Image 1: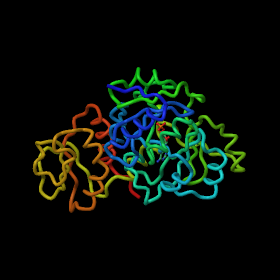
Image 2: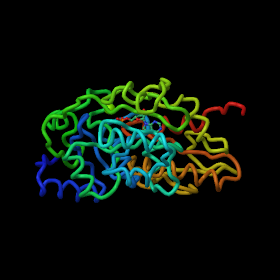
Image 3: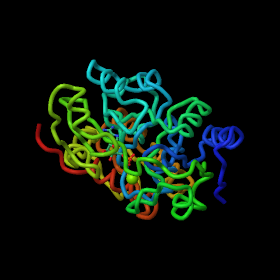
Image 4: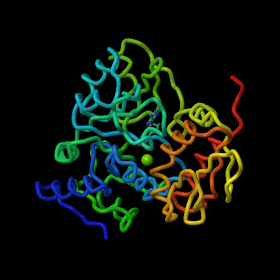
Length: 316
Ligand code: AMP
Ligand code: MG
């Protein structure tokens, strides 16, 4: 059952309580409705991918109440400070270097060294972020591949029964997604959106590169090789192998060095995935082998990420 909450003090307090429990709550922003979950909780972020049915772990935008909270998760240079003070709160997302002390779930950034962050202007989003008191990962609140929702009813139509609640804040004013400006190296328009590129160029005093696109923020090859473990990775290994570090899944993988989910729960497995790949890389003395993961629901995104980790590495 998905609760429809009013955007009153009581409704927002209830939404914040659900978010603190790790549940998912959709809320209005000035662009579209976002599907919010605690950006510090692996389980909450795994649930976002599950609820949307996303086939891969692409990075999510982190929503915070104010600039100071953004500085806690990202490293701001002078250019970032300038555009943030000009356009926040508002429909602008900045991709910046991830602050090492940010304590975000690695699922939010797809384990990249960058983070996408924004301060939304919508009064309900602001009230919820203040009531919750932390960063919220919030992609658009629609099933993967469907149109972004601009009303609470649209969210209900797509996600009812899959999330804890929707805060009804009426119709979103902007109706298109936030503009994404990448400032990790150079200055690139990663996605056009609510703030025109020209306004950003005026603020920065130079033209923007057009880099990447919304579906592939980073070249897939880059994602595949850059953050893969240094040990070779073998997939669909159902039994322990001599000399290999075994990442298991489910009750059949009793002897595994690490088990993504001893009960075979795909949300738990997704929440553990990046942590276990890193831990395995530290502990493995030979190859890393991984149990078969069922290719349904979140298992598809897990398998997508594992295939990248197992892909042949380009020679440096
Ligand atoms: P959304 O689905 O609305 O949350 O938008 C997410 C988009 O933000 C991704 O498809 C990327 O284009 C961009 N993005 C989010 N996080 C990052 C990141 N850490 N590095 C680069 N781009 C990012
Ligand atoms: Mg979307």
